[in-house]
Image (cartoon, rainbow, N blue to C red; front, top):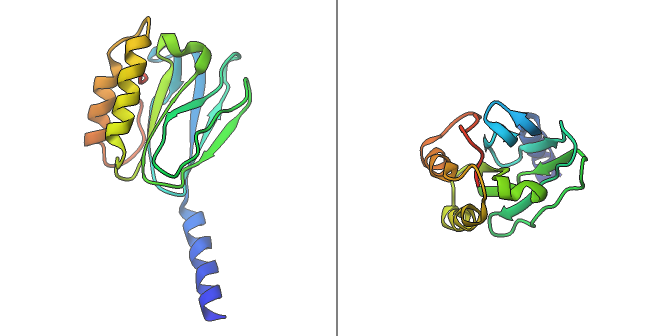
Length: 157
């Protein structure tokens, strides 16, 4: 009984501290055309990210996720909430605007799958027709940012 009560209280306390990060899907934003804002989110295990289709014609699809996390794909023009269950780097894109580098990154805790995420980014960069090069800044952000949430100058390719 005591163990069950402790587990329940622990779960409730973790949920009470979980944050929801909002990411807008935009045709035009502060960082240019076809962007997620913010393009980089620093989060904790248990947090959620809600993708808001601020402009029409967007959805979100994972390109790299930590081991043990299922790939995700939202519906077009629908709000989508992702629960962050494991540490690592989550790379995502808007499929119809992938050639325009409409992509972003979520870092949850330690970047345990950074090499896998970097490989996905490199492949996406090769296929991009515009906004080339922002993944270098993003990789730096993954390595150096320890706290908070902020937007990268450009979204990840």
